Image 1: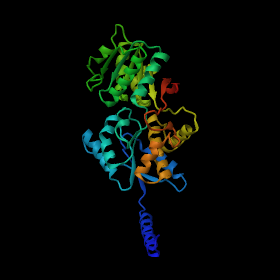
Image 2 (image 1 turned 60 degrees about the vertical axis):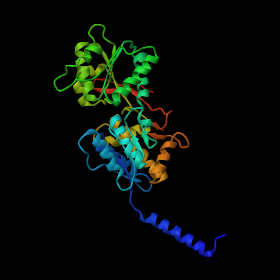
Image 3 (image 1 turned 30 degrees about the vertical axis):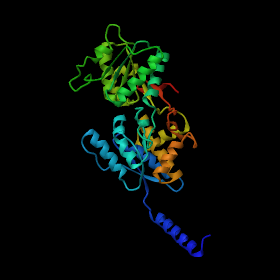
Length: 371
């Protein structure tokens, strides 16, 4: 049984704790790596989060600077974000390699990292503090393989890929899915010097797209500039060839100008597209156009979802890193999936995310395949 003196001391201790909590007025901070992200996305998020009851539950801040080399830049940026006063979670990094380089920093600091667009399946196993938003390369590879064989009727498929975590991962995902369906890859090669500054002299194109017995589809696991260059060069060799690019190629005026007429022979994988008519997508497109002055790409929608997901987590469970990690882990399990612009968001081995195939006609892109 507590004595009156003991109860008084307990009450005093509780008041001290509560007083200390009340005096800590530092806002919660969501860190973000700015490199892959238009500042316009942040402006759209800030407006949307300000409409929450009580206003935005967190600020968005980035690192002050980066070091020069690739590995140093990612690790230094992660260290800067981890050291921000009040940081409760981070959105980033730019691609699969940079994410895997930075992941140990967040794991050590016990900071949740939501990764918007990186697809390497290794990211999902990197740390219980790392949460990949995009479909992984196995899922995208299966999607590409199914579209190629069932919708396009392709039976002689070649593949060019970036020789990094993204390119190799998507290569393996496509190869595994095609092999399982009984349509193995006819030829494959890393991009190498196909599109170097001197115009390219790599033999990869001759290997994967020979003029005699050409493939009927070339899959390209590369970024926009290389993909456009490859499409132009191969189209000169084999005018009727079709192309299918991975998610890293986003359709815009610059890409279409670089591809030229070959753009209409190309199919593009995307996580989302501005033609979707659901309420969340139309509201996002409208806000983005009003604030930024242009139409958003899929990458912008993924970054928007990552930031708004974390804003919602802070509002729901408070500015505790551990509580936010638990919130993300529970989505689709003890908590309902988070309904984002890019679809329902959950994490874990069994999660599925939407993918689309886009095609360009008369300079405008539209979906030809939906989940």
